[in-house]
Image 1 (cartoon, each protein chain N blue to C red):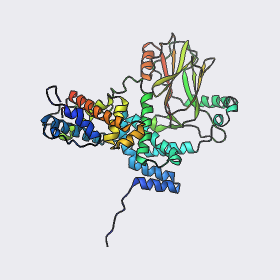
Image 2: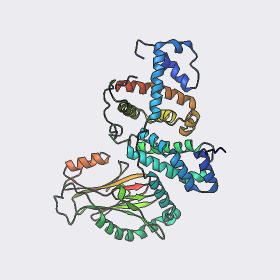
Image 3: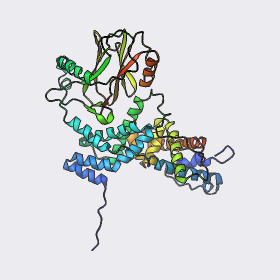
Image 4: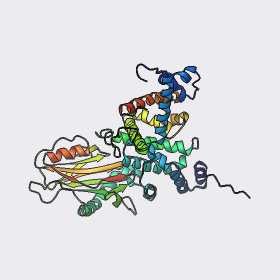
Length: 192
Length: 250
């Protein structure tokens, strides 16, 4: 007799939890499923680990408060990222006067010269740090668009709904932002 | 992608890819520059997808989320939110309680003195923060040892920041929210002054509040608007900077 492992779908599990009125259970499911991705998004948006952690916590606190009003028109995932996106913007606005907002990436180190003998893992990390620096130099709307598209793999209609913009305009923005990032990486010594 | 190379992929190909359209023009399949550019952007997309995968966030973040939710769910409605017409009277009713509790808070406070006062004082300048109580049972804000003893409040709470200038010739209580100066006391409308005491009552919004008392024997420098800039400038000018553990609002 064959045994089939149940495939866990956080979206369905969270919906079922909401239907049962167990908001805490729904929260747990969503935190386990999307907490890491929300942190990664917020870290790339905010460039600071403590702010990213705050944004993530605020996101799920607000999600818990909003369960009663969740209209099921979108996935939990895009709903959660909509909240996260706005909390990140709030924190960015609050820190707009901070002089070292984008220049003091806590975990950033100067990338080593990419040489053939460099350890692959270290080189990948350094390239990631260079990319983070390049992202931090972008206006928030461009940064958010490329992160939601490629880091979080949301569709353009999802992103458009989330940031209340036109999908075609977002496609244009993302393609231009990719060029900006490529040029920035080139300036940082990462040609390809 | 240099000036001498073909940039058609960047001009057309990238957008077509984002639009979900095929690159069916033969040029894109044969032009070496376009093929190279395509590989570069494919890698850039991969890099973006991998960004932050090695990040190691706080292990206890879910616990903190639940604690904040629990705190909010067990908070009683604020009297001034429920009864607008009586809010002012109720606020004043709590002042005596607030002052008594503030005294306790001052004892517990750990002012960080960058230098001893050089003027005649009747004690040390102090800053205290006091969550305003609600009707009925009130837990109030809770200091979080994990965050250096900062006070944790929830949105909608109210709190008082009180400072004793200890008779300093020049003194100013400043409150920063997320590193931006939001209140100067004296000066702003929310400020109350009584003798050597300065007091500010605030409605808690999301973020991190930092109350700081500046005292000096000579006029204080004008604020620049951020904690680091203002404390550095004040310390350079010989002022005393007294810092209360911050207030975190969820």
